[in-house]
Image (cartoon, rainbow over all chains, first blue to last red; front, side, top):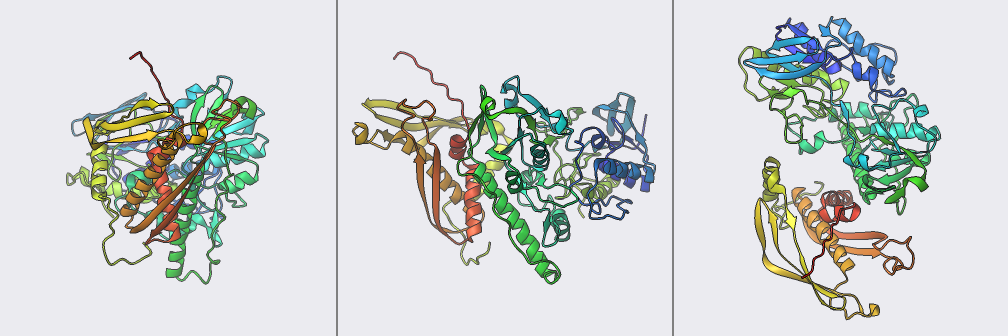
Length: 417
Length: 189
């Protein structure tokens, strides 16, 4: 089958690009391995809610219109929102169509799927940043009677046998699930590596409101100091909830969660943790304070000081004097290890030389190769690139580059805006 | 930076060269593979002498400008002759030097002029471990406390961030905070 553009993935990012293509009547198809919003339907735990407020989902030609702009979507609401987007412009989605390879084909690409082959001049990779849960190599050294599962497999505490749980990773997933398990009487030990602490609300407003207003979310990939580092920054320690609570490490230790350093080794039944816990917490506190400083400066410069609550700082992360660097899984009662160490995208089906030596996709602001684009990766073009709210600007920028390519007037340098 | 400066920051670190090396080694990961080496000769009793001179890196054999030696021994209260620092003090020296070098480099990169940097280190140890008195006590340090006193053109927060970043990037900090496989072979002379 022949078309002008093939978009891989019918999540918010692929649909945002499909909306741009549809608006300009560019012939295309959106290939989806499962159903629209597939990851949200099949790979998320029950209690998860988006960590961005409802209003912060401004897609091209679509957005939130309900009565609770400051609320946080549940998974069913997120799925309905994305399905509604696909329906709103009759996106040409082919569901249950799994891409098995993409190869160069003269002036374009040959896309093989389990439902046949496509040829197109344009390929847009929108299959998401969270395809494969990161599980460290030392996982194989764990005692065989320890049950392990990843965030992708976790649904709710009833899955977890009674006893202690080691949650590895203290970003959004790890802290949210850690809190849920601790409250469900599964004593949690949380292995904490580098993480980004953030309060849910600050000076009377949601942190995401401040970050959006102060332009933090719009920081650009080609203007930031160290883009490699910025793209590896983990998700903010945030949760979406009705009580808008902050789930930083102080809250978790208050609930009885025990903090240990990054899981660094396994020796028999002994788990070894890095002695760097204090420093990763210190770095996170400092980073949060720099963010709050930037917000305060913006508030002052924009005359917000009168209406917003006064600036303040949060208690530093509490770390016990000598956190354990060893724990025996037997004597400590740990029965389960839950990997919440992040995700990586899966591009193993790309038969085009665009991966680096570590299998990561090389791209310049989302431009991968002539006629090939990617959306939805962390800090692709802006700090917000991995969020639903980030897809609009990125899709528009890359769409401009894409149309120029179709018109035969591009180079490889990405569109600027 | 929070302070105004009227002359360029100079901590004696060639940041441009370091950043260029980072870029070069990103493009050529094989050249980033280094081997650090030491040889150690027993002298007498608990006294030994370690020498470093050669190492491997950037794809070939490298050499220090000179041969450096380190005498290690134990103090007289251990019935030794105290010809040098104890090995565990040399570990403290390695940690301090690594963190301090990192502080200078990060400060240069962040345009913070350093005037003085002093680290004080203390490693706690329960000798019941190495003497085999109590098998629940580890041989090594039960903790290391490092205190930096820094005089620089920077706010207290900037100094804390500087020291935090130095820990994040330090080889010796990583070596002492994380497990490392150690293989010791032996053969007849």
